[in-house]
Amino acid sequence: MEPREYKRVKISDKDIKAILFRNFAGAPDKYHTDGCMPNFWIVLTDEKGQDLELNERLNIRWKPNRDGDLEPRLQVFVRWDKIPPKVFQKCGDKEVQLDEETVVGLDYADIAHADLILSPNEYDPAKPKKSYLSRGRFTVVEEDWDD
Image (tube, rainbow, N blue to C red; front, top):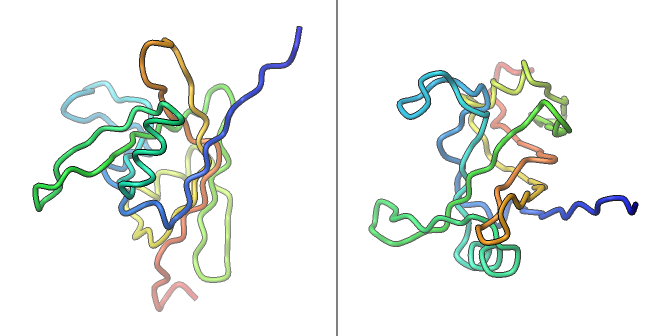
């Protein structure tokens, strides 16, 4: 039996316009009162959104922004139970690896940049693929008193 080949999708900071609806804690919300799988949404550039939708078959959602223009959004799930992701937080010259307990700080952090490697998973070939975080480097804004 051949080992399964996992496809990875890289998304660099230049392709990410914003990070929305951060729920790294998997906290309950109005749709999931018992909690949910930790996740966040990224707003992509139009070119990257089209590329991921057409070539990678990721589940891109085109939603209107505040100006009424459609923008590509992708929900990224953070799953810790099977193959945990490697998540790093960079602040100034310091970089630390986060785990399931410490990653919740990203829910409220002022994120300046993010570079992601996603692991798409196809449950049904007829549907778009769901995206899971494999690696992430989040650069947060350094405050004066962080020294």
